[in-house]
Amino acid sequence: MRYAQYTRRACTTTIMILVMLLLSAMAVLADRATYVSGNSIRVSMISQDPDPVGPGEYLELRWMITNYGSTPVEDLEFQLMTDYPFQLLGSDDGIRNLGTIQGHQKGEEGVILYYRIRINEDASEGVNDLTLKYRHKRQSWTELDEFEIRVQSVDAAVVVDSIKLEPERITPGNNGKLNIKLKNLADSLMKDVNVKLDLTLSTIPRSATGTESAALFEALPFAPTSSSGEKRIQSIKPGKTEIVTFDLMAYPDATSRVYKLPIILTYKDELDNEFTKNIIIGVIVGAEPDLYVVIDSSDLIAGKKNGEVSFKFVNRGVTDIKFLDVILEDTEDYSVVSARKEYIGNIDSDDFESVEFDIYLNNNNTAETKSNLEFPIHITFKDANNKDYEKEISLEYRIHTAEEKGEAKSRSAVMIVVAVIVILAVWVGYRKWEKRRRAKLKKQ
Image (cartoon, rainbow, N blue to C red; front, side, top):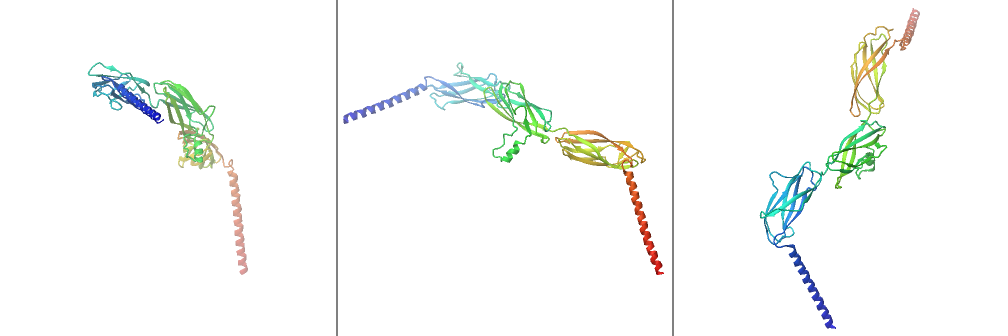
């Protein structure tokens, strides 16, 4: 029994020893297979920086040169063939002399081959082939398989070429068309171009409170109508343009001003690399001011040389008016004796302001003369978006007689009152005098 156990253990030990010897032999054979008699050059690209590289940019290239052979490689030279779109710098001829490389190299024992080149500014995007060759001891050149270099505009391939708003400004409560022209500046096709109006300000920070988020949500007083706020273009060819159109309505209570409208632009190149851009454009909300001017009041009557005229300026439009200046011009019928120019300033929508002028009538000689006056007014102002306006306004005014204006009756009434007062004063005086006279007679 013990003999059988001993025999089995001996067999097991023998088998394990044989397996270890076999593995060692295989390792030795593998190590020998790594090397070859003579010399054997292996060239491996380590890096392309940057990757991809853009037209007009500089490119750094590194290769690992390893001698797997059993003998050294003497006087080893490499040459980089720089066909279009690659360019060597200055007087660089592309030849590198690495000297002697010892054999039996492995891992990172090789030599680094380095080049710095430039990409032509009008280089086509895509994969371009680069050729590298070597020789030793001035023998014939050996050309290696081509290395692929990616050339690609890293950014700014698709841009907003122009925007056009129809009309130029959207009146609160009305519709407008926003036309955005996109242009592909690259020399390769751009696809899956997506344009989104960020009307809800999707960049709201998650840390914002509910009130802050609601305020930001309503910060842009626009809503898309008859179409969504997102448009997609299948592709844009190199150098070509495409136009996307959005129908927008401004809120009826929108404040007249310029709004910054964010646009999110995404697209892909032919290699399916995706790009995203955040763009800001300006959209004007406003309307032409509707300023209404009337003669508010006047004390001018026939036969009266001097008087005052009050003008009322009413803003009946949806946009505010700013920096209103008023000039009343002289005519042959009158002269302005007060300041001819008055500054009113701002008038809010649905509000008014008044200004008065003192004038002297040149021909108003008799109380029975009726006449018409023309008041030429020159005004300048700005709207809510600081657009300048200048207008000439002429207002007619008819000078009435005192009787037509009801002032004759009022004068008669005054005279009657004065007469009554005089009579009462005389009567009171007489009573006092009579009383003193009677008192004097009693004393006598």
